[in-house]
Image (cartoon, rainbow, N blue to C red; front, side, top):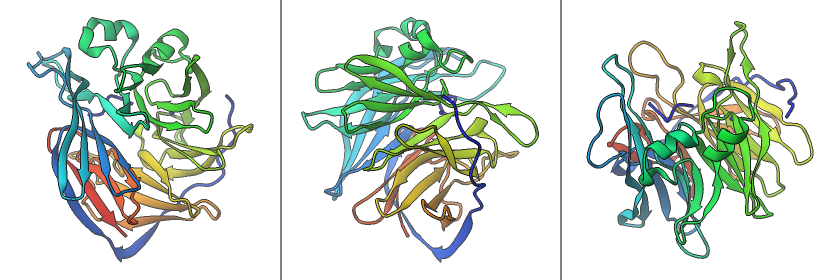
Length: 351
């Protein structure tokens, strides 16, 4: 996956056909003015964290270039208190040249509190280690999972992709989300590498690479793994965006010791997934499709893990380029909205 303008597998099990939930939902703007917001982390005490990818270099950047700077941040909402609790995190902006294109920004893509203090931060990137080195010292932790408390890099995803290139395609790393396992290792989706990487104190290894998706038209597209969720039993679920093609997105189920299987397909541009602990998986669509003009609105789907029935929450057109979500202890779905630009939002969606 661009920096925002996933072994063997089995055949798909089910084509997802979402049913519409006609009941209206409440959508409230909790925070605004976020800088390229990415994933959301809802804590048990009601605190909500948002990873802000930032704006690249604070001194500007010339067209056609990539410029890094310490503009990434962590935004926190705790009751009536709202604001950034940590700034100065790595960020990079890539500007199109005179021929046109889109502005791409990478930086913090997911953050969680570290029990020892500080935060564990995953940063996106969009390139190789050589390209990272060319951006200077401000870019050193782009494409890595690291702790802010001591600066220790837990896993260097850009290095793993540059050295191994597990899917055999273009050498390109863009880490997106992670889950910590019961052993203390981390499973990280690398949307650019089409790979789920395992990171630990002993280094990185390829958990599994997702193959290209052959569409009914015969076109073969990159998998683009995005959201990841892990159940208390160790089963891992991974979403892929399948080349950002409408109706091609899949959600994989990976039972320990077994080959990955497709749980649901037929969705569009699933960028994040979360488990609710009661047998349901929530899936966030970045957009229902790319058409002439602005992309279509995004959507939230509730998927029953046993029947695989897929129900769309009635959010209308209020999800515009959402990039991450989490389920709060209050039963609400917290969504980072308007993920491209400096006018991002945190929404509270209450079914």
